[in-house]
Image 1 (cartoon, rainbow, N blue to C red):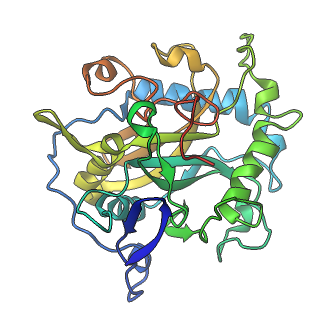
Image 2 (image 1 turned 90 degrees about the vertical axis):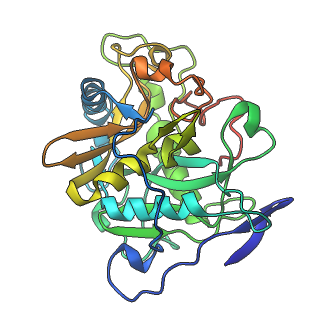
Image 3 (image 1 turned 60 degrees about the vertical axis):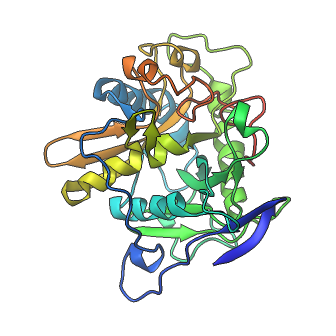
Length: 334
């Protein structure tokens, strides 16, 4: 199914949505067979469990309790968002296999995740759970490479593909305008987070520090995260393979018992380059099986530096806070 061009000179083709013959994610995303992922292959996106749990504890103690619990209309901020692993995999498969209309080249160079907060205004997806109104959440959108991407990272948001996932249901927002306003639901949700949570009088930016820490001068809270194609979809890295987050899910889908998008914050136990992001908001993917819990997001430890193809601050696995990596400029984001 071809769609109108949204970047000059780039023709876009994306897989059509499946006819709703059965319930579940197959109603929204086509079932696409991915590559034969190597069961044992590694990914830069994996986080050590001790660092991942520390980050989640930081969010609870530094952000949720002192600040965000007072900003929710339904009482009590989200610690995490429940997501069906197969639904998430179907979305990633759709993005990973989309090609440009005039070639077989992949269309998307990565995935952006915005921090957001839902509301009850016009244009919301049908079935929005009322208990999620006003609470911290995330919106996904795939990105297309633009002229600045080669040196700065990031990419241009696809205005047709803003998605909110909750439990087993994917919600697709209407096409984003070329000059977004509050009439664009996804943009409004993103603005809700920035206005009511990040930049409110007593919001995260004003708080701007963890207990016992003076915070950074001109502190700016995180608005979005961007993951490059390899870290999220997987792909070849020299003579090796990086599974990406999608590959890990794909090889374990039969044994996954639950998946959440969990909120966290960088702490004082981080290694460079993450030490400079002390206190800043992040989100990571927690995937549970009967035998283990795996964490994915911003990489940590020696694994980060062993991947010579990855560069800190421009590889999509780190975040500079405002509005997304890299901070100057953040190409293609809202």
